[in-house]
Image (cartoon, rainbow, N blue to C red; front, side):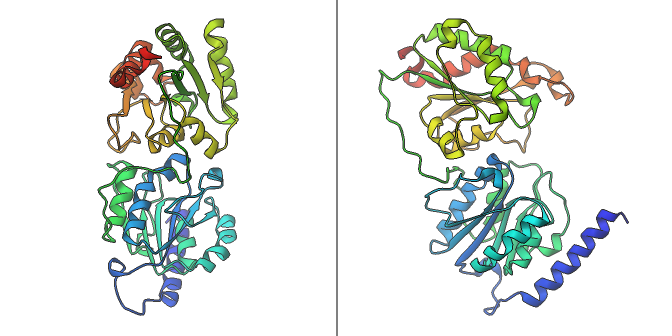
Length: 371
């Protein structure tokens, strides 16, 4: 038996013993029949991963309207949660034992009755849940999570063939929640910006992604931008990205004609998460790879054209509002996209195809030609 297996076996023994001696269930009801007043949800991975669980959070609040919900999220997502109707408290924790120990005192004060783990990392999420003295623990084991400690959970979902939004809803269906709604929400107030025919058409670009092979290819994007600029001379191009992605923006702008470069507004590295949502809410359509920015736009019901490398049955494409979202796959244009070592598979998608998808998305109200 490997060291890792021995470690997990020891953790399992400790957690199960601790649960046995501390679990309180005076009414002897199974968790499906409880009327929870204090719910802890854990989703402390990337930005998009948190937004994927928001349909399930809404369903929990609808099932338990008088319950307080505490969200455990990553330090990287600090500031994303503001005034909203679903989440009452926030605790920040990443997947380290040090972070678990720091988070525990505040969570114990909250006294969670159930821990709902949407996307975290074994064993830290389960250590937190057990030592917070949560009576019930249910967990979605994400595709890349460690598949251990099932016997610590009261219920779990393990389905590598389904998108995360649907798996999160499947997890809480055991509680009797209505899981028909797949719409994500942004967990802060974002006022809708009113536009008219005199407003410039604003096209957003998210240049970077979590991995370099998902970056929007600069040459393709430069070609696309010149095509859009010719088609709609008054349009603007707004760039989005993290501070580390500033060089991507600089390189992109340098490859444009001088006239087109003056139409670019660069937001890369200049916004908070809530600020990003407010800025995105002003655009007409977003061109993006698979990123948190795509998922913010989806939650705000903003039109998108997203570029993915390959189709996956458990992929992260938008699960809502299909009339707003067009998805293009590089593997449809070159089989080399299936090769994970290929450095820039999104280059296989021609600029003309992206252009046609943008025209299609905006054609309903003739938005592109009108502005």
